[in-house]
Every structure is written in C-alpha cells, then in structure tokens.
Length: 232
Image (cartoon, rainbow, N blue to C red; front, side, top):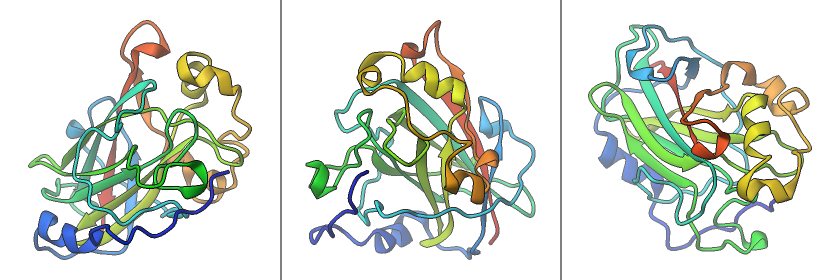
C-alpha cells in the first residue's frame, strides 16, 4: 500500500486558486452522486448521497487540465461529470471538479515511497461548462492492496468544498481491464467492492460509474458519466 505523500512546498494553494477559477457563489457542505447513463448532460434527476473519505493521498496543487494521464498509459477512460443543484436539479456552471487516482501499476503520483515525488500523473481539475459538465481523459486506475479500484473526487463551488467522494467500477469492468495490457502482470485485485470497508460503509453502491466500452474489447477503452447533486 502506498505511503502518505509528503507536503509540496512549491505547490500553489488549491483553495486560493479555486476561488478565482470557480467564481462567486454560496455553497453547502453536502454532495451526492447519482448514477446515470452514458451522457450525464441529459440526466433529469439528482439525489444527495453520503460523503466519503478523502484519504491520505490528496495533494493541494494547481492542475487545471482535462487530460490527467501525464504520460502514463493504460486502458483509456473518458469521464463526463455533471454538477447540479440538488434542490432544483439545475446545472451549476463554473464549479470545479477535481480528480486523483492511481496509475495502471497502482501508484499515486507525488508519493516519495513509490518513487513518484514531484510527479502529477492522474491528478487534475476542470471547471463545469454552462451545462454543468466537466470532462476528463484518464485511464482505469490500477489496484493496490486493501482497496477496491476507485477514483477520488472533490467538488468546489465559489472556492468552497461542497463534496468529497470516491467513484467505483463494476466488477465486470475491472475483471476485463485487469486481464489485459499493462494491468495483466499484476494479477487479480485482492479487494473487491463487496469486501472493501470504505465502499460498504460510505455508500459505494450508489457511486459506481456507468461505463460503456468503446469497442469490442476492454483495450478499446471506456466512457462513462455521473451526475453530482450539491446543496448550496
């Protein structure tokens, strides 16, 4: 299991940067993920959902970018995440959605014990457009001991955190992905959704990504989306 990251003394303050990027606006303390189809931009509903742990591998750095890969390879994953007001289901423009996760080898960037100090792969943020949608290009994360595969997420409105959560994968997806390409040499993951304590205790079943394969095999990549309802 990776060790917690060391502080980056030269990093920009994330929250200070996000105040400028996201613009003015009130924000609440709760967030929610709602499973949708391939295109969350047309989702008609939103449901508040339980918050989830941030974990020890968050880095407060300024990385406004769509492509999170940072030169690392794996099974490509195109994500479309929509932020809406939980009370009205109207899209929120200018919210900042931030993601971070492991590479295909199960390593987080910026972790000294993993030999990734100073690296920023699989980290980044995007502002939502007028439809409330933030788009990302990344890969399916590799597994590491003790956790089911997941992607961390934070959402900011007006510079304030309104949701912290984790996104998960259907077992059929990870089984197909981990049986090919760069993932195959690492073998089967040792923890599944069913056996993961955080998934079970923090509403993971309602944060499973709805993914569609882009071609005939897992190597062709996946697309998926979720709608996030926030209370502000």
